[in-house]
Image (cartoon, rainbow, N blue to C red):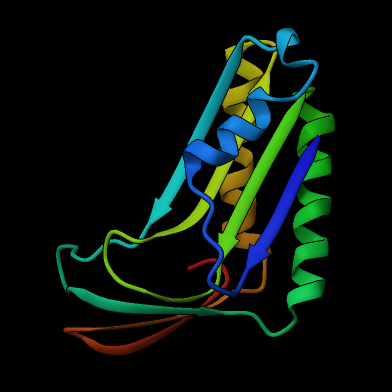
Length: 145
């Protein structure tokens, strides 16, 4: 099972709900590990503060299709059973979740490796535009930033 959603409306799914959807699958008894990741907005780093992030896409459908392909490739490569990814669009403030991922597999090593690959590939391969507003003014970051 693969869940791949890019949400640009008021719906919210928590990491707990995403994990629960995985645990409800009939073959969950074949799994020995679930790893999750929740990417949140960082409000401070060494050089600046961030008050708000606006995340958008040039083509929602195309990006969601690419996300599905990434997840299928990762699932096959690492032989995990279930993958769920939710990526939100819109405006966010520090502490808000923007990206959720959950992976279930038979063993921890391939499950953790699958999760790490998903996080990196989503960041660098999907066509997001991130506008950061804060102490350093407004900064536009295209995918990979």
